[in-house]
Length: 611
Image 1 (spheres, rainbow, N blue to C red):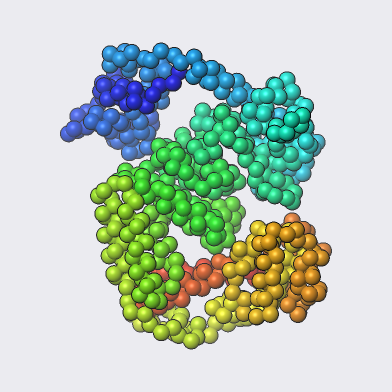
Image 2 (tube, rainbow, N blue to C red):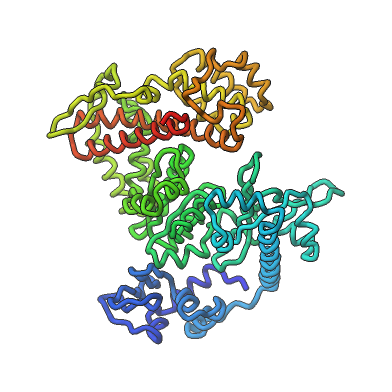
């Protein structure tokens, strides 16, 4: 049965919420509201509030929140339609007659969920069979134990064009096509075939725990790395959050909701004992997904990867949320160390390391201010004017009038506090850095070690630039995925920079790249006229390296060098601000960036085998 939003709104308007709750919960009057001990968790001090004017209840202890229908379904366990009928009877409203077409769609959806349940069972069996040895070894390397595999229902799609189609033929080919598990070519006479082949299969469930789609991670080389189910009658990827069935109850207990980028990030957090995590399904965060997050927590924490893509995704989510934020709902942000994802943080420091970051999330207003303030050098009046206009534009998109005014005032106050006449840039990096001691800025001594020179404002040194080019010579298939980052790197050696530009141009052209083609571009066996020193033991510069590790290390090196340039610029700006303002906040920002820079250097040294 389909009930219109207008009819449901009328039902809620005619329902006195406290009258629905009072028979099972002892309510105490508190001004215009009611208070009680929460019926959803054990407590001695009342934190459960009922507001008849607004028509909702909220527990400040466990986060339970909803209207009269939600109370009957969650607290009394009633099916949705039974709850609607009970409230409608008391409100003197007639429930609309059933829509035959709606019933048919509901029955069809129920049948399709049964199909997906069988598919999930089949994939799980394949993972545990003889053909699943490689996949089980991959999971073991990732630290995913059998209990986690079972908890998330992880399975394996055989590397066959028709394995699923043959094994589950009894379910009906049309249903397997409708659920997206088979692909039906548009050309007449073409047979359908399995959508997922040779992939680790991760079930996506609805809030009731029913499998509605899959995300498939490739085990070997190839693209795309992740392949998701298409939109189907069961699955709308823009309205679904991965792990919402488990994260919903967990978020009430933890009193928070964490949003990460992908399936493996959710599983990594679960391994660390953090179950209240969800992820979008391979898309940027949508308005519908934001609404689902806010139903679970008024201020979810977005914890995306510490790379350029992760930072961009966080800002996109922040801007998309602005029109919908209110005093009761917002977003918070945690920015992971450069080049790391939640799995890296957990593997390196355990749950404690991640909890330390989650304990101090950045507010939405602070994250957007920092993004715009660091977006471009503020060296001209035009740049300052651009910053001001962007801040005003962002504030104007906020739908809540009072909140829009407060954001605008706060950002403009920061703007005018930071606005200073431009100062000439120093010629030496050592003159732009230092420490804040006893109220005075003290210039540092020359930093020791050759590694300190390798990442700086002059660009990447020739050895590391040459190593990257040799890496892409041996693994040219990695160029398309990293050509944008490679193009943005500042390379000090002009000849190597020119070769880099030719490689990037070839990658952007869309032409097939292999070793011979890349060698032709580089003009020989030596990238940039010199070999990489043996003391720099990058796996991706050696032909005898494990290919999977070499590709991973090459991607990491590009990420590190790209992040290092961003940190270098931010550090220079922070040091200049410290010289102007001499505040504890400016000093702490400088120290944070210096620590980030040291971390990047250590990671690069580890990859190069020189640590």
